[in-house]
Image 1 (cartoon, rainbow, N blue to C red):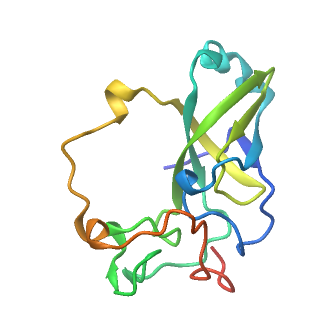
Image 2: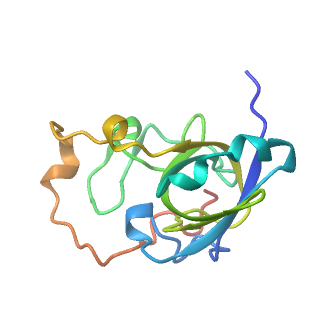
Length: 160
């Protein structure tokens, strides 16, 4: 299997410290997606969507653990029951607000990735396909959440 980046994500976050853990917690953080000009024709009609899902590579990841302590929790959990960035295949997804399409540059908001993150794909967010109401959230549903917490120190000092 071979994957090739189709662009790069530019954000105001140059280090792990202070980078939002999830796009839903990154309200207002703006960035750009620089799509390789060869793929610009594929951006046609994207400007009609308010949100897009970015698929990207956690380029600073170094290894993984099968049990991790996830964001907002104190207990060890199975890696695949979390969104921890250190994974066997370090692929991330974030749904961000699409502000504008300007040639091969996408202006986006609610970014939660580090500057320079390689972009693998872009998908439009379609509520009929992407939203579910009959969900269970496992261990996450038992946590007391603090909505104003954007980041924690869990991955600082480790390569993501």
